[in-house]
Image 1 (cartoon, rainbow, N blue to C red):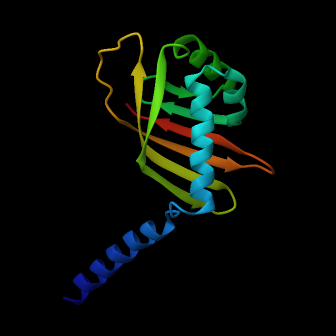
Image 2: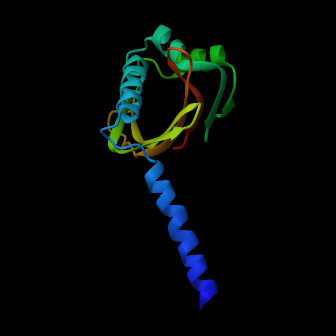
Length: 150
């Protein structure tokens, strides 16, 4: 019985620490990440490649479940420009977003979003999960790791 209590306590403590690590929605960190998301995806939806370029770290790793791993910022931006611009828009499901601080680095954003292909207006857009590792530099934030799952 004692071993069972220890296991239950450990599990509860572990999950409690995860919940506490999430930034509250009224925190400056949460608001900052949500504003960064909004600014980036406004640029994405409007094919503003210069703004998008500013959001990616030079040491980028972009994991896409269908497209594989991209580590070249210039090539990723070319791919977005050639395959996304004017064809696809993204909508964030705001209620799904979690933001977790990463001490001395930045933050993790986890959430759900939908992509709408205007080339197929009747296609049903299913929500998909994403994870962004935001890195805080001296004066700005950049996306250093992205996981996009569809």
